[in-house]
Image 1 (cartoon, chains in turn brown, blue):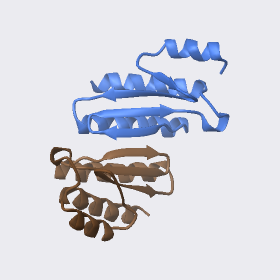
Image 2 (cartoon, chains in turn purple, green):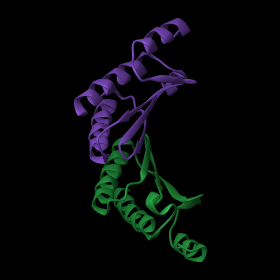
Image 3 (cartoon, helix red, strand yellow):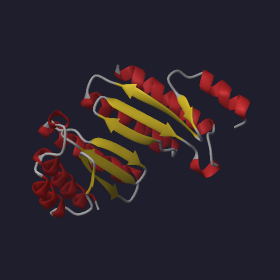
Length: 93
Length: 93
């Protein structure tokens, strides 16, 4: 993605930040089990899209880190999964 | 745990290393879905033991980081969960 496109896509999301050639967000839930429910929904979406985030679970917090390794940077596939994750998280809280 | 006890417990495990007041191990599986199966089994054990590791999933690799935050360091609870995770991982591979 071009820098302007990337900035525009990021500005359309809430809570996501850019970290080099990745985008990341930390979600906070009620407890560990809620985190795991979210993680499993994200895993399902990731497998469907064949696009897998790095997933870090720290009890009630889940950090997703997204990058398109094949493309060497951030692509529309990352934003697609990011938006999906946001929707899933909203359903969990 | 005393330093000698800690060293003895670590030497009884394979693949785990100490990182300050934590112990950690990275497990490698066949693919993302195998990683997720392992993660869910670990999550179940963690909830049963009320002792929750930090869990990082990177496609076919899962890193568990264990510490007993209440006690400010590594305790027998960490080694108990570590051994359990090793058993679960052995069943997945």
